[in-house]
Image (cartoon, rainbow, N blue to C red; front, side, top):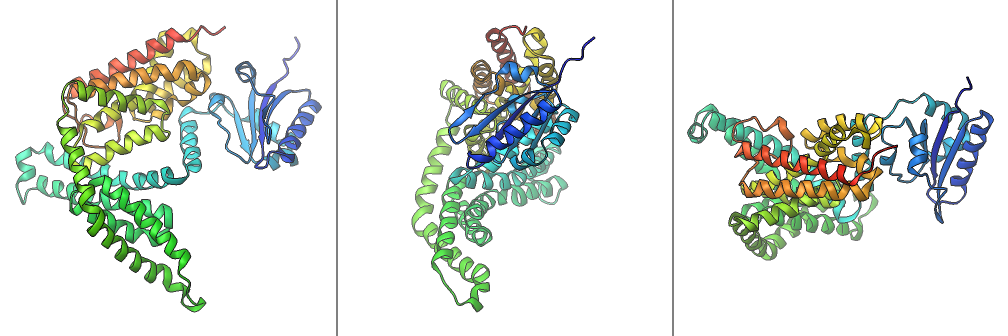
Length: 457
């Protein structure tokens, strides 16, 4: 009985897209031919992608090689043994690289999702990168504060409000050491992302001043960007003798940054930002019926649109920022809608296994774990492989989940955790109907995906 030759697929790409891209492709092809292996190489040069890998190429491949110094979306290779290196390594040692690829194990979905998240962080630029830096540093304070407050409420609302009790102490710690730092940290690390360490003090000062007058997360965002760019340009403009350069980042920039930013916040920005924030709070707290459903529908669809990308993070940042103002309904809608895509795809693989490959069915099991943990990125491999069918389906399911959560008046006081935080008392209100919203969205996602997808041959 003749042995079936191993099949490989590869992607090569260098920053200029000229010489090394094609040198790496040629080296891999020659090394594969010398060992009587089949290989197809997709090159991403200066004129665009050539010899593009098809779904059939990837499905039949025994291993994948990514030899690139530029960003390459590896989501379409989910479930395949994969090796990722710089383009020069494919030129220097193509045979060794092929050996590594053939010996590699199939990608674990959880590890793949973490890789995707890291890739997205590295690719983020401009204002989005700065905002997400601030949000990422703020979240631990929000989570810790919210859970501590929830634990204090488990002893009873009256106990949490009675000075001297253990529940009261937990409530104070959660409210002051957790939630109390949210807004300054958000502003401080937006500024840090722009101006590095000299921006932290001015940014936190801006956030503190914004919080003191009720300007909330909107004031913190504006103040963080103001402080960051102010310090960034001061650093460029101010020139000191070489012997005094050492005092610029620890004395000159923080002093001028805090002083100028503080004056602008107090005399110019705080009052209008506080008025805008008050208007937003009044509008959100006054939402009832159809208006609440529409907001939940929009937030839910945003969470599923790019599964952890800029649109998803915009909805998440909006809802997280409102926690400091004790507005909890949008957070509930966002977390429920973010859990739905991976859970729906897991259910889809169970309901119609013939529509999915063996690798996809295995990935579905891992997606379930990611889904209940509120990691929306667990849906990315499925969406990358079949975007025009999967993305509309998961958006529909998440939109319905978000709408139902708002309709039922569900509130969530922590920004993360998935089902693991739901059993805690007072973390989520109307828990039964909250679970109904998630289940309904999951079922809608699964049914729509399977309705749109054909059977696999």
